[in-house]
Image (cartoon, rainbow, N blue to C red; front, side):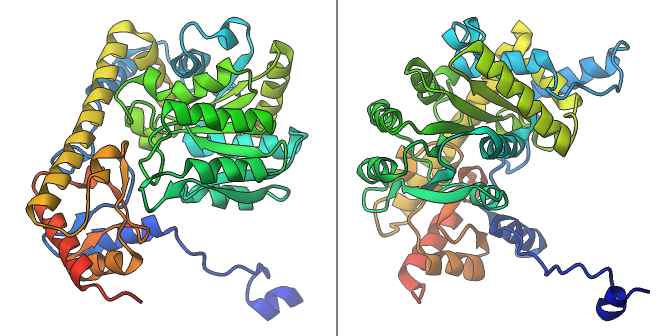
Length: 416
């Protein structure tokens, strides 16, 4: 054997054990916990009121139709994916009468869910965006944003103010200040709706101010769109921020996931949209994004894309899918109301109205790290130590238990 292998007992690769993201570590602890009343408020995946995953009926219908279709085969999709899906996904986001679509200035490719779309977007920005390579992300934000940005040499992870713990709302003044002070032409990641992890979105008036700063500073927006329909139950309302930036003439990208909104978690279906100033620019960029796809995974999976395409393009199935999204939105609103009522009934110290005013899958509770650790260790209620909870983990059966556990944590947790 070589000297390296003799010295290290292997090929000489120098790798240490990596730290799993906290959300997966906590989920694993929950799954191994034998306590009968344990509660999982960690992972952002939809659950019904029985706390179970939900395969949408329209998805089951689509799968049955695909299984019976003798014309389908297992050939590769193109690098850009299934065009009937990406065309429909683009219309869903930008609107049926979008000027960008009508002028052929919006292009799209199928991605490996939202994470894959962001990965391609970051690779593309690093290679072709001529502006500043600072990527500004809200503080706080989805943890994977930093992980992806940090792994691309040339991109610089930065943060802008977003959450105001005093008002438990958007820190608009701080956000606009940080965007203003950022280097001209920075890349800005914006959560289009149902902000993860806070559940707090800017109002229409606030979005106008955010757009004004981004326009003045010539920033390049990338919208993270994982929860279209979860904020309000209405696709058009939830796409407001993106369409506002489109109307104001921005070039931008949208990274869309169909995990939550169609329940296609394991199918890894997403869409990356690029909106350009001209059709030529847009299609040149699309060609380069396809080359990035080729270098990473060549082509995306067909099965989930066919399901999504059917749900988007078939009129009856589209209506059924929209009803499913409305039900998921309504179920989460019921969870918020249920927990809010339990917190009030159990006389938990503090004001909990923000549970109702926040939207989407998550809530930023305002609990401290010590209180969260107390909930986990004493009551087997698993949540991130930032105080973020997934509202889908709250059910009519466990809401009172969670509320009483929160009360005990607030009264008895020892702050470090």
